[in-house]
Length: 105
Image (tube, rainbow, N blue to C red):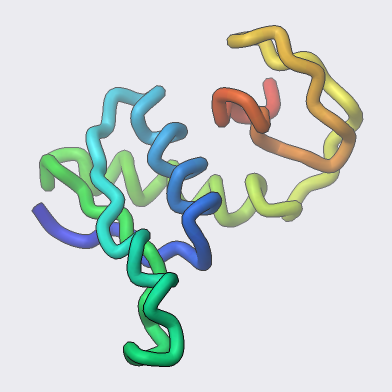
């Protein structure tokens, strides 16, 4: 098990965890409870996503790159309906807020 990505906050870590899980890539989030100790610990106490199976690293890094490029506002989208869960997603979001399914190509 090796670290894959240090997220900016718990929400980002959970979105990426859910996205990778949908691609059958198992991860675990470590360090997410450390934010409560801010001021007592060093500044880099953000949650970290750890990859369970190193054989998934190449696929996970490709999905992570797409998430960072498109999932955080890198590519504008119109309002859309998630094909996986049916939720309405507002314009500008490339991931479903409910299940982290990417905007359909």
